Length: 168
Ligand SMILES: CC(C)(COP(=O)(O)OP(=O)(O)OC[C@H]1O[C@@H](n2cnc3c(N)ncnc32)[C@H](O)[C@@H]1OP(=O)(O)O)[C@@H](O)C(=O)NCCC(=O)NCCS
Image (cartoon, rainbow, N blue to C red; front, side, top):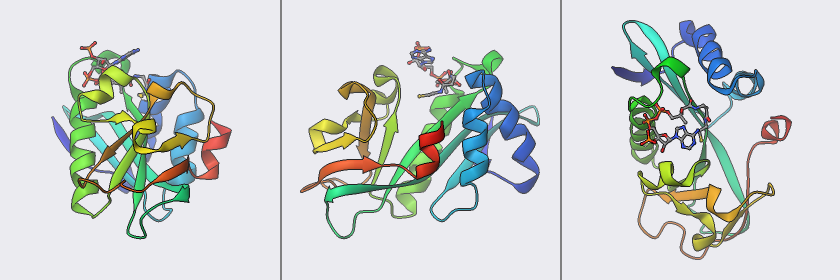
């Protein structure tokens, strides 16, 4: 299993992975719209020379109070081909992506997803850090991970994704 940054020749395969994993085209379309925008990062998982998983990060902002140095990303979408799921590929993509985000100096990552799954990587309910979601979702599914201890101290407000997310 290899995890690496997206290359130009990967675009079709990434679209296939997202469409198959979500059973619809919305997330694949979102990735196509966001690709190339500043502060976006895309990683793929490769097994036997086939792209079997994908994770994407894009910028989010806090509408409220936050430290001046705060740079945050949203993790979405995360997708693994159905026949490759529950074999650890999604976890590898998350760990690799988070490592890269930390290395690049981002302070925190938000995610909207399965609480038990993301808790494995240290994500906690964003409410505990004073942050709420712009979408109407249960508290426990909107989560945050500090990549630097204390990075979210003094934060309060609503986290906003890029407007392209409103169409998903
Ligand atoms: C979610 C997803 C990316 C996980 O990838 P993966 O390679 O299967 O993940 P891993 O093998 O590393 O970990 C599996 C864990 O994912 C979580 N998970 C996967 N599907 C789940 C579901 N439908 N409901 C709740 N948790 C789920 C579970 O915690 C699972 O752990 P378990 O096998 O011990 O129950 C993959 O299942 C997928 O592409 N699903 C469809 C797309 C999707 O829903 N993406 C949104 C992610 S928030």
